[in-house]
Length: 159
Ligand SMILES: CC(C)(COP(=O)(O)OP(=O)(O)OC[C@H]1O[C@@H](n2cnc3c(N)ncnc32)[C@H](O)[C@@H]1OP(=O)(O)O)[C@@H](O)C(=O)NCCC(=O)NCCS
Image (cartoon, rainbow, N blue to C red):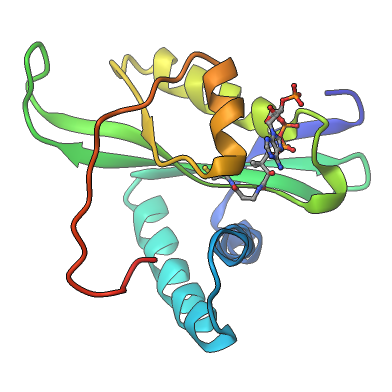
């Protein structure tokens, strides 16, 4: 993407990584500032722990001036055995977010492609994600297919 560069994030980028999840969730469903602040603190702890354990790898797209325009993360999620899969970690794509001023220029596509390359190069047999309505078209264009996952709610947590 001319004028932009993609790079791996480090723990120094934690504020940007938390901001991306915060902004993504705030756009997806109504949440109070207090709920989001609680989530921010928990997510910061989670990212620290998972990056340190090398189970989380994050990517940022920056403008030529070094402004972060978009980001996304891979989390290696433990998965039970299946046919032709003896069990282990599978890359889960999460917290994909493009700042509104930079949307429609292919930045999210760039991040998804990078995470797909990262995962393919390391021999993972598939990847997973939960799509928002805004993200679905992008993933389908890149060859992702819907899965038959279902959910039963005991509380309103995790909206
Ligand atoms: C979804 C999102 C990440 C797309 O970012 P982006 O950088 O604008 O995406 P791209 O420019 O790579 O667009 C790729 C495709 O996505 C689709 N798309 C992008 N924004 C869209 C929107 N707001 N509504 C519907 N489809 C959209 C289009 O099909 C687009 O294809 P096109 O190039 O033919 O127009 C961005 O809108 C966003 O951050 N939304 C809020 C958070 C979110 O929903 N994240 C996804 C979590 S699964």
